[in-house]
Length: 356
Ligand SMILES: Nc1nc2c(c(=O)[nH]1)N[C@H]1C(S)=C(S)[C@@H](COP(=O)(O)O)O[C@H]1N2
Ligand SMILES: [Mo]
Image (cartoon, rainbow, N blue to C red):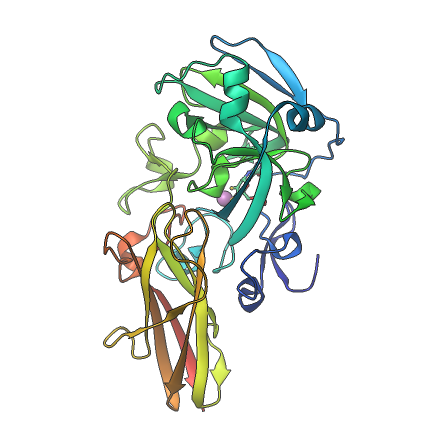
């Protein structure tokens, strides 16, 4: 790993890039792409076979090579973001569980593989929207003391979306072991947790996955619920991701010299366009429109934005807010969205700096 990665946990290895390095390019290189693994990285051979089985289908297994031979290749540009991205903003409100991610548990990559829909059709899976498609990884993970294989599921409608892919490459290079080699799922628009790495098994089911990652983790509860009281069946299963934006430069607590400074970051609206991004230099009283560096209509990708602003001396309170194409902006303050697991911090991002 390069020294631009900031390690949030060494075992399992979890790391995010330096925020300025993250937005230096549209496609995030694998070496700068955050790593979020719940257990040890398994070492799978490149000819490892993935089994597909379940309701109404002719069970089969495919190696990555076979998938590439039997189905057309598909490349999708999509953001992958951990539901815990920006958790530190919620941890400033009150303690939460989970790794202290800053703004870097997100990346934008070009993923290549085959459509999950094509593979499901080839084994005869029904298109019934009441069905679920489960995914099992090769890694064992510990969820509150219960150790089990990594397992998640998505609904059949999403599974049949032509942009959901079984991917073997990222930005034109084979996946590295930490990003899921030889094959992972990519579910554009959904929280990173659904994009299972190190796939070993796909199964068509009539219920969501019962694996602890699906059943008792990545659920959103109101602020009034403590972890000890959580009724896992009632929490919101985090799937489709909401509008988010963050300032990547300057960083919280940075000291800058006065004059014209570039304020820059990313915005992501998942399936919607980012209609505008605004920056405030005075804690949210007045707003200026930032320039968008990337195509704001790219369906699953992110938009990097920047604003050259004149900063006066003293403590300055910078804020960013994005709007999507429904005209909706991010909530103003993180304290309105605190939850015990620190998920989905999508509040306007506030960064305090000292200018002298
Ligand atoms: N098998 C497996 N898949 C997994 C995980 C994992 O721990 N094991 N972590 C998930 C989570 S929570 C996220 S945010 C993304 C992170 O993908 P990355 O490490 O390639 O950035 O992978 C998801 N897929
Ligand atoms: Mo995640």
